[in-house]
Amino acid sequence: MVKHHNRRILLFSLSRKTRKGQFFILGAFLLCALFYMGIPKSSQLTASPTYDLIYISNNLGKEIPNALNLGLNESQPIEHLENFTRFVRRVMLAHSTNFTVLWIVTENISTNDLNITVGNFLGSNKTLNITIGASSINITAPDNTTNSTSFGSDPGTEFNMTILFDSQNRTVEWQRDKLNIYALIQLKRGNNIQKREVTG
Amino acid sequence: MRGFWYIIECVLAGMVIFGFLAVIGRTYISLPQPDDLSVMGYESLKSLDDRGLLRNYVVNGDYNGLNSMIDMGTYNHSIKLCNYSGTCSGPSPNTSNAWAAVYIIAGNQSYEPYEVRLFIW
Image 1 (tube, helix red, strand yellow):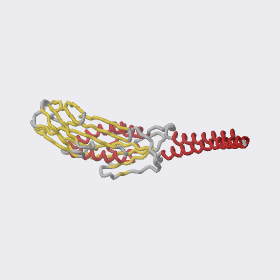
Image 2: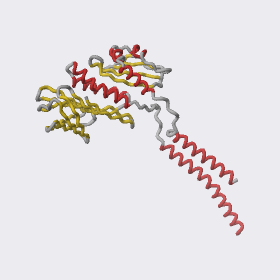
Image 3: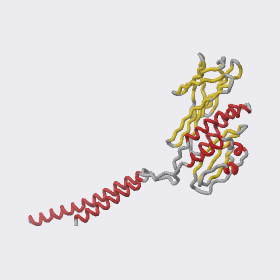
Image 4: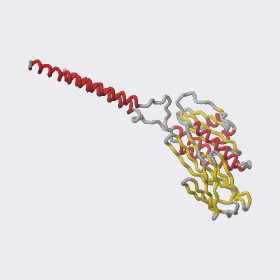
């Protein structure tokens, strides 16, 4: 009876030991199955990363003021600048790049009339505070629009203008008797972001 | 017999682990990347613009003339010009694997925006 009992214990322990290895294998398969299920499917189309955003921002940094100048030659500086902004945004979208820009243009209309135009294409409404000398005004530009206002005092032949919006504070030194532009450009593709400021 | 099963277990476990790493590791182990030809293409277009040679071809729609001014060594290249309305002129590359460089101009003597696409393969 004891012998039979011991034999049963031996057989039982042996069978437990052989089953242990199988459970390990089964457990490994189940774990791997869980991992494989968690892996996202790769996209069919793969694009090699490119690092050309800095070059495109250099290109736009030159062409945005150029668009303003060419528009001035045709007496439509703001219209052509806005037109060009929309063109660039469309082109960049076709290249999987998000292009946003905020520009401010000053134009001397008369001695006591400095026209300030804000073009906001940043993706949200913006309110800017503009200070020239001791005077300050607020301009609100809804997204994807331009807004003009008059700075009704003579800023002087040369003037400093401080632009305040969001958490950004910029001071530019401009001349009254010419078109002036400040632009904040941002290009974004994936995790690659390129920002550039242009003054002229 | 026990040792035999242990060996089998080790082999299967190793296969599972290596198989898993081979799938996951693919995303982290990358082959050496070729040169970023889009940057070379941009520099080529910018060089032409800096020398005053680019804009005349673009506003006249002469994509062949502009393409002939570009030297990309052993690579093939073609130019496509797209205007404000999105109308493009010029051939598309006859390959599914090409680099594209983009250069934008606001115009030449007058406002006439264009997108210049240089394809390199």
